[in-house]
Image: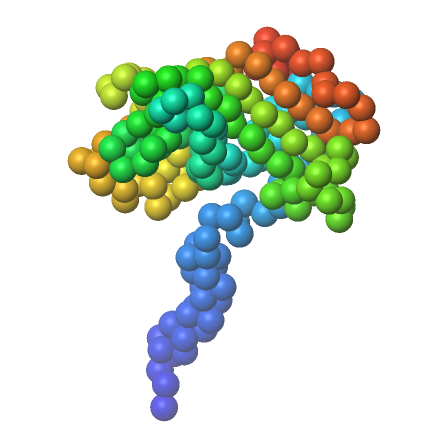
Length: 200
């Protein structure tokens, strides 16, 4: 026959089990759906939202001989608007190429967020953005590198396990040009200043 203490412990176990499960499931599930989709007419806010809500895209660099090279890469902007990457300078061509020619571009699609309402990825109403600029290696002991690494590891925990001895370092895309399409219209007229100073 169970004692009162054993009965209480058993009861508490059943009460706590769902809470323990919530802490064990992935951060993506806990994060829930993306923040509300902004008005497409507000191009700066929409661009910041799209970059902030995304987690990966195609990062383009120039290979030797100035041949375009695109690679699927995880990123995080940490809420800053600037995409940060954790790239190997020895194992992956993207980091290798960036050190020799920093001109790069990051292309993202709203389709990955699940907010296109069944529109085809190529449809103008399913937004897409390309951020172009220079891919810059951040100084290892700088505050910005520490901030970027924390943001990357929070959004992509597996990156923290990548071996630093293999040349993994934090890079920042310093944006000089923005190409955004989010409706049936020509690409939006959007400056880097407007993009960085918008609030989401």
